[in-house]
Length: 205
Image (cartoon, rainbow, N blue to C red; front, side):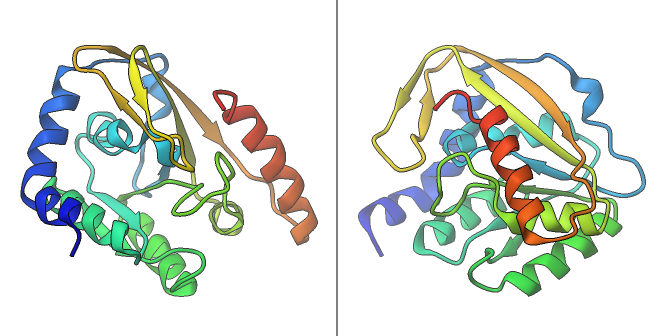
């Protein structure tokens, strides 16, 4: 167990909650975040996760939020943090446990829950939707809401995801996007849609 993990397990949840509570979060179009009897997929970039996870609680206060978290060591720390913050969990990714993850996501949305994930995680490429998420939303006609998050003031780390830590009491602008993937006929159509979507939503690179 790394020093970060041993320190982070008890301290990270309250620190994250305290930091996010100071932020002035401004959602431009909250009406997009409406979930009916069937749940939705809620997504945000991996580098924005410090605010992105708890933003889901603000957007969907009456819903159960279930987070998709990888099976990596970093994912272990994240899963424990999210569990203490009141999230349900689906462990795995497109490369590890992919089919089981997809089945769990479908089951959760059928219960009316919100499935939250970072479509470019856990290893990138930066700001690129994984095909699995788009195929799932397409094949099962699942509503997909993407949160475009912009911090007024933040510290950006030199990591693959350009992870950002917002400064306390800074403003956070959120624009929600309702994404409706078409019914894809082949993998080439998925690739074209993914590239166009990622270019449109990844303009803060």
